[in-house]
Each structure stands twice: as structure tokens, then as C-alpha cells.
Image (tube, rainbow, N blue to C red; front, side, top):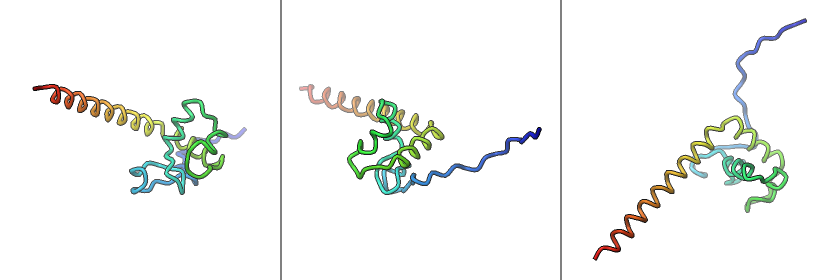
Length: 109
């Protein structure tokens, strides 16, 4: 019986995923679209099946390979979605605080 030792793997590549600095602030997106991996991950988390995502987004129809590549990227980089959600929550809190401050100032005589 032969035993093979685990060796450090190569960095995974995702043929349907690209990051472009001027598109979606450099977030990884499905190539040729503005559909970010986090968009696919969020939709999947909300119960949208990969087959439904082919026409779920308003841009061009996707291929199943593109959807699966986005999901694979997400599962290999879960911290990116977590950080995106944290930043979104902070932005919402900041907007709500600014709105409340504006309304307080406006209510003063």
C-alpha cells in the first residue's frame, strides 16, 4: 500500500471570475459582467438555486459554469462575504446616525 503525503496545493484559479479595479470597486465578479461573487453568494444564501440564477440577475444570462465558479470562489473565500456584510452594516448605521442628526437639527427652532 502506498501513502501519499499532502503537499501545499496550488492557488486555485477561477476561469469565470475576474477582479477589475474600476468594476464594483475591484470585487471579484463574473467575467464580462458587474455581477459580484458576493451577489451570487447572497442570492444562494436566500435560497436561490444555481439553475435559477441563470436569469436571476438583470444583466446577460449566466451559464451554470459561471454560477458554480462564483459559488466555488465564495466557498474558498468566505471571509470576503463576511467583510462585505460588516462594511454594509457599518454604512447603514452611519447613514441612520447622519439622518437622525439631520432631523434633530431641523427640529430645533
